[in-house]
Amino acid sequence: MDTQGIDQMLSLLRTTAAKAGNKVNETRTPAAGGTDFAQVLKNTIEQVNQTQQQAEDMAAKFAAGDGNGNLHEVMISLQKANLSFQEMVQVRNKLLTAYHDVMNMQV
Image (cartoon, rainbow, N blue to C red):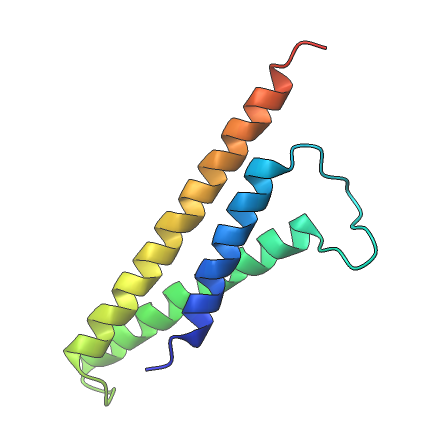
């Protein structure tokens, strides 16, 4: 089973969370050679969605007896999808907390 895409997505989520925690004063347009935070976030959400859809497809095929995969592969795929979703929710929670902290700052 190929886990390279999942590993890349998880490292991207961790990087995004670290950037969100360290850079409160992020500008809307990236500097030369920089990355666009909104685009990184969008790509990460799309990857999590794709991972969940693949896991659901594998589970449906296994339940129908169509797939050539075994239960072990299906369960691993479902757990990876679950973990990636949980990590995305935690990143969202950190972003919301940072947003609320910024909004509550006295100027």
